[in-house]
Image (spheres, rainbow, N blue to C red):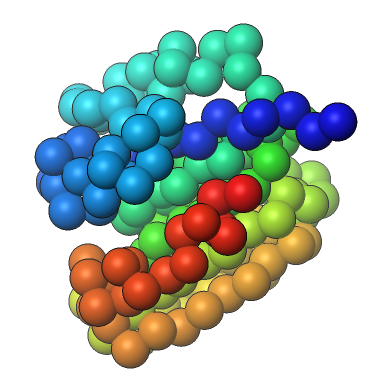
Length: 160
């Protein structure tokens, strides 16, 4: 029998649990963890690790900087991760020396806007193919916020 997944939403740099995505998840998936991350990347990663301490079968949803955080967590704790769903992730910020020796085999879904002016699509595509061995990469007609796409995604299926 498969364990119940732990689902967490990791918001971006200038967002919070009270942003549009966080409020959507709070309403549709009340059991989802939606922490408020503040500070620099190290402080945010410390809080993420505290939130997920002792938990397995984790489904991480990360938006922008939250996508970077979800990926860094997966690199360090791959065996605990069930799935990654990354929304315009800032994975282009991961130094090459922090890449895993082999691509992560965690099912990973990336949604990135063709018109993203914050995080370059081509860089994210290049890095994603090096990081993830089980990757679905979807270029959507949207910008960095992904508001045209986010609410249309089949979250019930993605989060199972």
